[in-house]
Image (cartoon, rainbow, N blue to C red; front, side, top):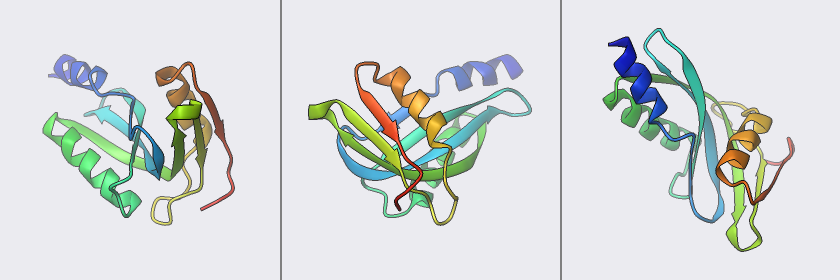
Length: 122
């Protein structure tokens, strides 16, 4: 069962964000029960609250037998025409995500982008 869970974990995308715009994001630690974990970024414009994104993510992961916890949130400004993403702000409910971790994840997914982050802003 452990190997299957680790396999499921490896198939969870590190980054799923909208193709453009300004929207909320959460940083989520996903783990196979009792096993290794990894951090993933989820950001969507449909979400009114950070919890909306986290709850949907947790639900999807639970269906794959994975557990998760929210490490914090913020906002993303994604400007595809300029190939830029800026990470900033925080979540009232979950606190501020470690934007440097988020930035590294985004750089891996968008290697040709300029990706910046700042701790200010809401």
